[in-house]
Image (cartoon, rainbow, N blue to C red; front, side):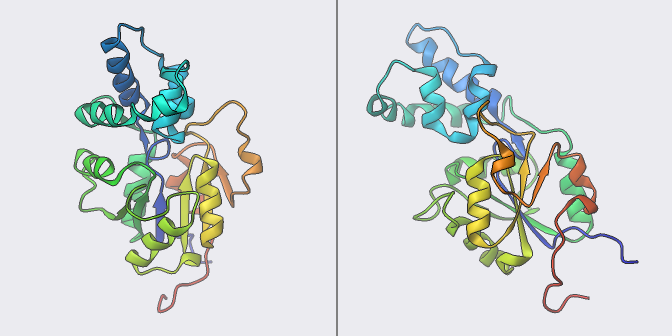
Length: 231
């Protein structure tokens, strides 16, 4: 009987999937609120919307402002976040060992995130990923971003892998929508960020996984057809 192997190519979302970046975002919003003489929002308030992006986080911090006014705060938010990126963020439990297991099995992995690419690239050296991450596609790298499949398809192309031989792992419904549209297998990372009303059971991921520790085992990943030229 052939032992289970990891997929040959894996793409990950970043915030809420690999990295628990919510504490950094709390620090950024706290600085913005303090500059305006206002009290900070809590980690519990901000955490559920982190995967929804900067505007969703600003909506929690400044609920009284109209959308247009909050849009004007996005550059300040990103600037403050860039100034402290990585100071409070940590990898989710099991992520480091999961990536080690992928590397040890000869799998290649990369990141497709809606975070601006210049910010995502700052994370790589902090986690010593710059020589391990095969590809990084940010939310502003291409004309489209998730849930559009283009970023996933582009990342797979850069890795030299066809979409059906790749799996995408993410904690938000848009991640699963993008994977399905790209023709990739998908894993819903249930350890990530989501609103109370979000129901991952309706996302139609190929697999729902409770924690990254489980993904240290090749048997927990979707199975794939053999890649051309593989043994």
